[in-house]
View 1 (cartoon, rainbow, N blue to C red):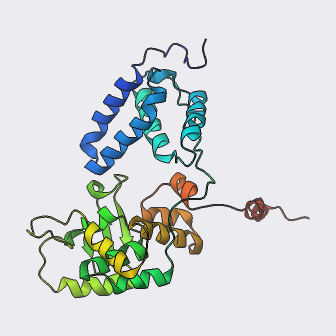
View 2 (view 1 turned 120 degrees about the vertical axis):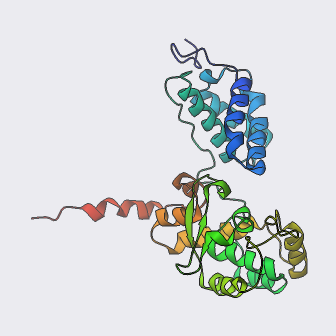
Length: 289
């Protein structure tokens, strides 16, 4: 039997057909940008995996794909492509095209990230050049670790000033999992002030007032240019989560607040030193009689 065969479960469709089915299953639940990301992942995966049926894909093929991709693009990051492929394989298992899931290692684990960590002076420079809306958006991303889309789509109904928490609902969450986010002191002060002004149902309403704004690219780039600071808006969230993982002793708590999985946290933020790992079993060491 060849390396790619899976016993009696070898009648799965081609990779291209499985990819089409996977996209159809995801489209009703994803925002356009997230759906486009899956399409981008498939564009990377298809040239190599397109010659296989979905049930033939295994750990060896994944390892060869990683080597093949790194030869052409040494700095390529595999996290999203792996996530999409694993999703397809899980669908394949549910459809009974294959018995077990191959374990695809994440080659990005342990690699230094290319994302920017903002310095405090840079944050102050950006805030000094930001308009009212952008000022609040920057602080929400930097202090609360929220995604741009989550911030811009917030409705007043999602904000509870009494409990000082806001709710990211399932439909507006990238992970499609609702969560509560504690409101920082600075954001709470700004929200209380803004709540006294008429603004409709949304925190950041569109010019028509019927919906929320869809982006803040123009204001963000203008503030960057005036402040002389380079970096992405998303790097504000990355900076926030990095600092949270450094200063909060419970990684699971940070994952809950930030809306990310422990796997993602380990790939991007958490890096355990061998010295720290060696101390773990000593917490349960039996005392000598």
